[in-house]
Image (cartoon, rainbow, N blue to C red; front, side, top):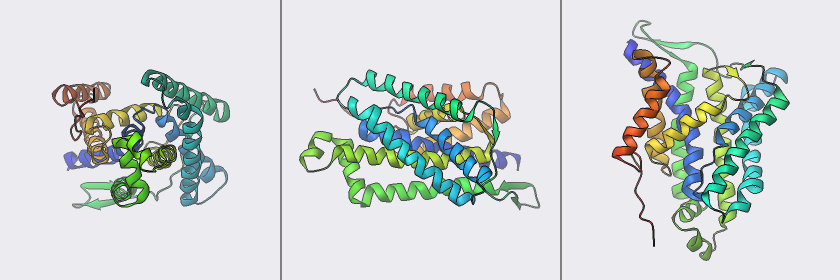
Length: 293
């Protein structure tokens, strides 16, 4: 049963990575840029939920909804102020801007909320489901995390496949110029992509801090990097790839901690990524695109 416990823990951690990876993969797929500030949006969402629940005594559902609303607005503002003016700029300029936005958000959080770690309040009822005469224990937080991830993925796939805005996103990811000629508002589509990714980042932040309840201004940094790794692992630009990459990364990390070394777990995760990219440069579910000359 220990093995099965590790698998479930890996799927729970991987579900958080997958939700964060969606933000990276959607923005890259449509705007063709790497938004390295995405990890810090997670932190902002967690802080908003923390203050809503622990200081203002609001219900957890209201705290999560408030976090999503704040992060959605934050994502739109960041896109409008920092990225939209660089739409035609070289990718290196956009990358450096993204890193600058990331540091700006971290330092703003330091000024607003100080560097003192805060204990995140439980937003899911404590307790666990006992199976096999108590040999297998699955916490409610774990179950909620995995189910939330699956629901978000299914909703997002329906959204991109069946709705007008989703089809506009797919058109922009194929060819922005052609999409604009067809009457699609490319800027509004990219803003909507940032809004959705940032709103989901808030959910990921709450779920992450529910499992690992220490909250500080750098909380989103390492999960953000690992989620970016998961997006690349599965094939950046692919929504199913983000899910697959996130789950696989979570399971690998938990097994590395359990059977090899806690200190080496991160190194093992990135080593696996390097090996996968050497064999399949576009990621496990990614498709190699031919550059037009």
